[in-house]
Length: 447
Ligand code: 2IT
Image 1 (cartoon, helix red, strand yellow):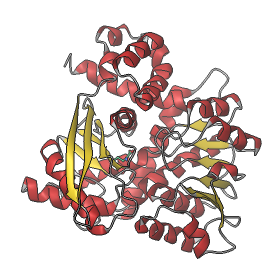
Image 2 (cartoon, protein in one colour):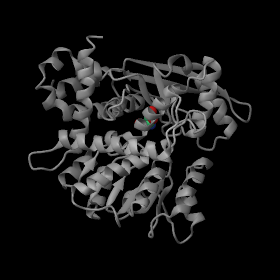
Image 3 (cartoon, helix red, strand yellow):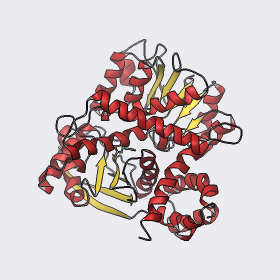
């Protein structure tokens, strides 16, 4: 396998699909050496098969807004790879959603799900629907219209979507209600991220953020350092940032920045319990403005419009919002400000130039597919509980999540250790994730 050759072929076949091509290239660069030591991979054309989704559904979603006007959006489900299990991955509702974005997310999902060591294939879906400023009733009607199309293609043993950007517990409730009515069965494993009481798992809302901080804790320990007193900058204020802020604060670190599309809130004393709770209120308001935090906590949260979280001096930087949200320039500012660790929590949150800058400066950098895998892992645990008709307690789920994150960390070290003893977490995650999928594909034949 030659990365350049494969990339040239893909660019010709999928022109303009920038995010998809970016995600594929990162993986290919990491695995090239290992891949070429396995002639059986080349013979079975594992890479040529893995980079193309099994199938993509595209569908029209028509719904009626509160003014009585008819609205039409585009919905998608990318069923990428099922070598390890039924397709699994979130749904994203965001105006910028398109095939390239969902293909990048689905591709990342294959490796992430593989790292969890659970039986999960990779998929992703969503719609170019913007939840900002929408009423509850509009959200419900949109979710119902979306499910009219999607329901035939999902199921616990087929494809199990969950939330992602713009899709939280409320949306999963509406989606599941519609699914159940159309499928005429209470098949709880068909969607995850359900609320506790009707199939949801305790700790699923916290899992992505908790898992990320468990991973960060290991990165910090690896350097014989400790979490206590560390200043952490997080971007976003959604579900993922909320979980990360909760766990980081519990471990004695100080969350000194949160951000939104409108700017950054600096929190010189760190976030407290009240602020963490208020993040949920801000998210549920669907205003998408971090300035609300400064208005609620004057003096404790200082808002600067137009700036990113990376402008705030910190020891640990964790992008928690969107892909490519951290540029090379942002990375250089963080390095100049003395950042010690960077862990992507958002999928592909850092631009390639930013990753290269951290690696060149010797700042440990871990990629989203490893750091944020606790979310989908806990979705996997939710499916297990649904299948067994059981409910684990919060400490039981948390302990399983913690173990999965520790195992992922160990695999990244095993596959990412370099000759000088330092760890390339990007290579570690990509190689470890790839090997499990490739071996499963080999064993299952040319299909
Ligand atoms: O990016 C992700 O891993 C998710 N949005 C969660 C996927 C899931 O199935 O829980």
